Image 1 (tube, rainbow, N blue to C red):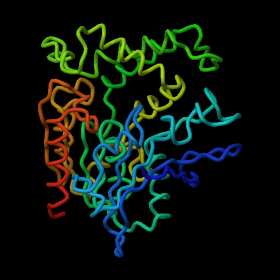
Image 2 (cartoon, rainbow, N blue to C red):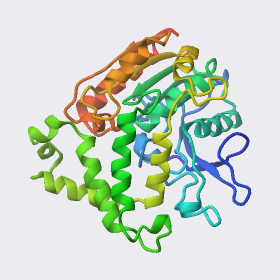
Image 3 (cartoon, rainbow, N blue to C red):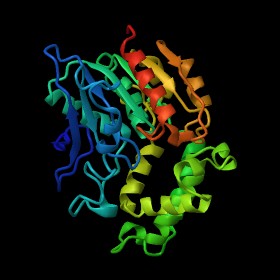
Image 4 (cartoon, rainbow, N blue to C red):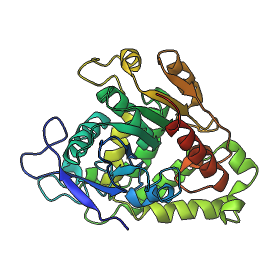
Length: 335
């Protein structure tokens, strides 16, 4: 397995005068002599570099024999500097808020340090897709192509409200104590997970008992598995990354002053939008609307009863095959 490295965050990225913050990352393959075979593959909400590795390797679409693949971990998400792994005075509830833009600033500094001149592709799912979209605005001439999977240019109001629901379920636990807990707020974490599970898949998934395909006899068994998974995450990490998600907007760039449409129009990269049309929070209608303002874009929506979860790296055989085929097609297409 590739070594996990760290890179200090500076400049316009999220910084602290008291503690050095860092971005954690892995690299796969080698940068070529022209320094133009790089692929950036950011992580998603609660996901890490090891999860993304399910799509990386010789002969895969993200082929380590051809490309230099950089996997940066999202700030606040548990591996890069986060509330749960940062010492005082920036630990826990005192960890500074981080935006997607600040993540991209830090990632750009990282790629500069690695000698990358050109990015052949930025690809990401969910919050990884949010980062890929922001890359196209932050460095419009550096990014040749982007594949945005189950993500939008701006977190919609409906998506924001969904996240307020899961946040309220967690913070209502009396042991949460405004983020100053001494033991994990177990009840809140379990409630968070149960609310989230209702949104992560489609209505058809539950109506057709597709949770049976995942090895769960009942919906309740699935919910208990979600509870157990969320108990492995730090509550403040979940909320920090959730805030980054809620505030995502490619218009939040100094060149665009909050104007999302202007930011869309500024994108020079070849960009393919790949929503799951059963995704309940990153809605395909938002992607269709974005196409009206993109100069070099295609809509590549697909169907899956697994909804938003369908595009999780390596989770579902058919959907993974479709995503890898799309990555290969995009990489082989002219810019």
